[in-house]
Image (cartoon, rainbow, N blue to C red; front, side, top):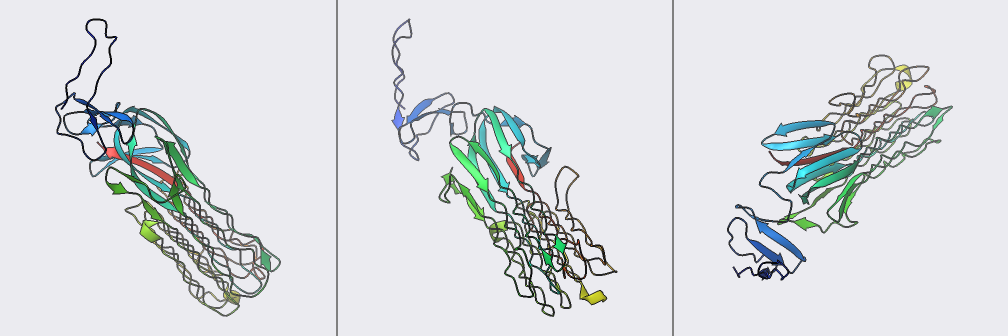
Length: 363
């Protein structure tokens, strides 16, 4: 280490700190200071590692919808938008998950496509003192059936926060297309994620992880089976299951409990009045809800830890016979689709699961 010199007595002189580049820091003693010329910042040795000003040995913060200690890490869960107040900085990790897309309301004597899962970004970052504003996206609403056609499912909302010059963003999954004819409509694509608009971020020797939500299952003709939805990539939420008239509806795609992402909702079945099979929700942090058949099983909401954490609501059952998609699981699962808009007016696809932001650090 170089010596630290200052003007005598009046502190009017300059502090001449030793200069190093990132990745080439020396061994240190507690209280030592250096200047990193690569990023233009001072670092302090806290007895364990070189850290920027405001970092402690253990971070401290408050805020969020729920705070839980999991495996020695303090987790701040944001089910809705809010802020985190950081009183002691330190290294932290984030999970940012977009809302799931809404499922289709079905078509004339045919089932619709499921909604897509939201995007996911997981990353390590430098959490410094101050307030972090967090935005959490909602799940997209399911498409609504009316007289043999249905409206499009809604796109899930984006989740994000900005801190230290970086913005961590997970986009919502796309909603199913509107449907007015008997054809195999393609399932929508899943949400994506980025940090400052790219996927090249790295901090503390760890690269960001980016997941795309599972696509919604493809919609059906009057006799075909529901298309299989996608599981989320890299732990992202699953897509919603497709519905059918007289075929077999599809189960929702899977999310990841380790990444706090939900499974997609199951597709419904009209069956021209015959019950037959239903589509079940995919697995994940919380499972998606099952779809309906005409009179045996009602569709269910997607799983959720409590009323403040929005698992997707099931679709409307319909005014003639039950015919609705299951809700997407929390967080970010795509909504399941409803089958046959002709026979069940006012039925609708399931809502996508709401988004989530989690910030964790060593407790």
